[in-house]
Length: 204
Image (tube, rainbow, N blue to C red; front, side, top):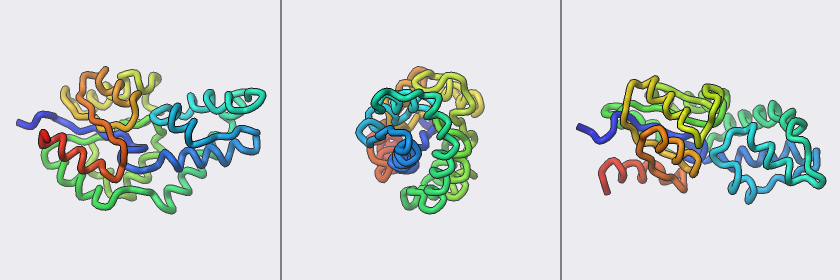
């Protein structure tokens, strides 16, 4: 019997190196409002967070601080630019579709992300991954986001499983998975994701 019934993957920073793309898009749409978004701030406070909470961080970067509600008005433009960038060059690791095909023989698979479905689903399809997934949980599926357990609890309910390995890149994501009763492994480089997951499943 395998140790886990399912493997659940975060999207940004795990399946695809998209966090820098998110950061660049926010930087571009908020610069005209006098908000200097930097990678250092984004990496420290926004990785693993839902977009609506990011604007509260960005608002404090302006002098004087900006109104988060005003910054949130730029979200549709940010989302559009992200989709365009990803459609042009989604930075998935080579061989990721074959990796999911192999895993699907033994495990149920899912994606659990704080990003919206619009920022996930088209790229899972394009990468050849979506067909192997039993569920995709997006930020628009739950009221409480990571680090709350709700996203992983929902994924578990949809898949009908009680044991899973969550593959995450952020402390909020790790906390969310563990609070839902699942094991978790941390990814620091999406290019090494497959190697890290294989090692964990093999117990090395």
